[in-house]
Amino acid sequence: MCDTIITIPQDRLRGRSVRERTLAMVRGLAHEGSMMRQIYTLMAVHAHPDDESSNTGGLLRLAAEQGHTTILVTCTNGDLGEVHIPDVRLNPRQDPADRQRLARIRQEELAKATAILGITKVYLLGYHDSGMAGWDSNQDRQAFVQAHHDDIIGQLVHIIRRHRPDVVVTYDANGGYGHPDHMMAHRVTVASVDAAAVAERFPEGGAPWQVRKVYDIVWPRSFVRRAIQVMHVLEFFGLPTPLREPHFDPETLGCPDELITTRIDVRSVLRAKWAALCAHRSQMGRKGRFVWFFQLVSRWLWPYETFRCVQGVMPVQQPESDIFAGL
Image (tube, rainbow, N blue to C red; front, side, top):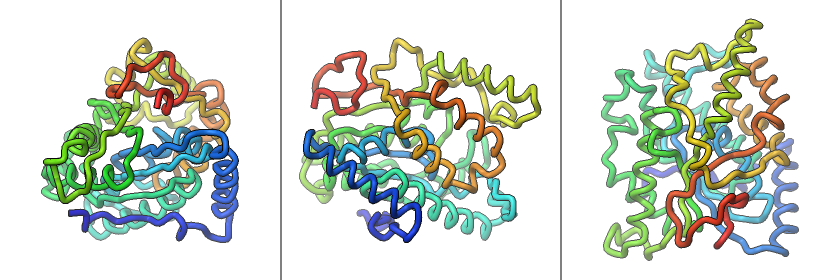
């Protein structure tokens, strides 16, 4: 059932470089923290390489430093992402060979980013990127959004039952901003969590397991408003921002602040989060000055990663500052 899954063993990612020193530091912090706290398993399900860093990079790095096991599932190979590497010319939407090359580049970038974040185990399901909403690629037979739900759910159930996560994190029903792959990841993750707890569902996937808490990744509307104001200032000074992207629709962004249950303070790991995000060079290359500015102000503008608990074995005690609280 899981033959299509590619895994990246993290022990093979340790080079004689900054990444090796980073992992050694994370392991040291994890050992120190594990002497004082209960150890849990966190599983994050994302659509593309780089989503793990932009949406949950702080949470994943913090969990690793605290000694928790972190599992990442990346559903697609991101082979329709835009290419922003100055010395690389690829047109993945038109050239199948370029699409394959971009998939390889993004897998290498994911390996670097997950090493920085100290992620324990990475699974790549290997589906093709569906592209943005409305693209012809949405209809491709190999696109993630066209995959049979039970095929994906069966793979996720196997991973859940193997690693027995206490907490699972993925997108909300709108996928954050309406991306088809994000929305698909939400649907199959929710269905997989339910199926993993039922012995009769996918019995070949292992013994049933009940995930104790499930979270949606959400952005508070107050943050979205601040970010858009800052981007308008940057645009005034001629710096490119996501406001210029054709798919950017501020009306689809953000969750009412009062619905957010959990705010994780990630200021202590912001440097690692940005390093992981910038490891995805194919996606971040051309945004140089924009990214530099947000790195500079993120400690004040973006001090938290925010979530909404949508399923749990017990009510969340709000406001929650620890995703493992109550376990």
